[in-house]
Length: 325
Image 1 (cartoon, rainbow, N blue to C red):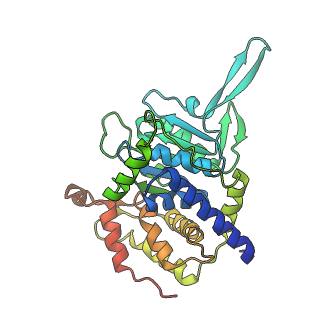
Image 2: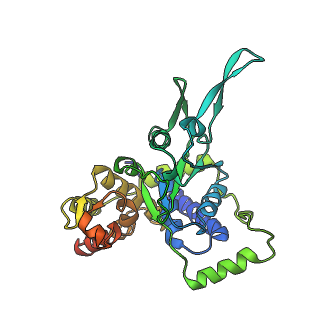
Image 3: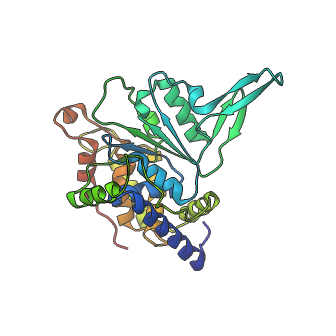
């Protein structure tokens, strides 16, 4: 691992802080949600966002894309959506007598996959393959996606009619599962005042968000985050958390090795957001819930009693002693 020059790290920390501030100009409150999504971008991962309609999921993604002058695409997933509608397809041009490739909406920097669980398994798999490989194959020809590339998929936790649940193996492809809840009263009051002041209609307004960096700079930030220092004790702490999920009472299936890898990756990104060039146990603990909640399966009898993965993981984290460094 290469040591990062102090001046370069400080500049990177300032850029990340500026990105977070710019997102806050459009997306009021929900600081944990903003940090988690920004950490996923810095860790070059994808995010599954769960929340009821109207909590600003689309606004958050558009604001994030605007901070680095990135391209933004949105796909509204429906039961009749085909894989070619996501990835693209070839067309025969009668005027030239040749086949031309029409690229799908995945050729972007940030892709909002709205209500991903409404599409059938074949279409979900097409997107998840793109997420894993970073390329699209159309008629046997591979097309690389320009980095940074990030998918933010959303799903509604309440309405289940007409949906296709994501299999556990596919959920594991998401670096984080972020849960957006209703904002506190003071934040909601601030949101009401800001959004309704002089604005006609309910169009999402991200005009106040300024571009801080270019897409290629985000790739540099990702490289810096990947090279932050992780002490062996912190690494062991993350490992103990992940391994404990496999034998914890109430968890039917625990997180695999990919869960530990994801936890260290996103903890490094969290450290960069905090302005540190090293990872602390608190970075690991803070990111453990969004990193592991979709990688563990509660026992059926506990699910019936209303115990979800968040409650089980919270209890686990309280019992595992963090190192003091």
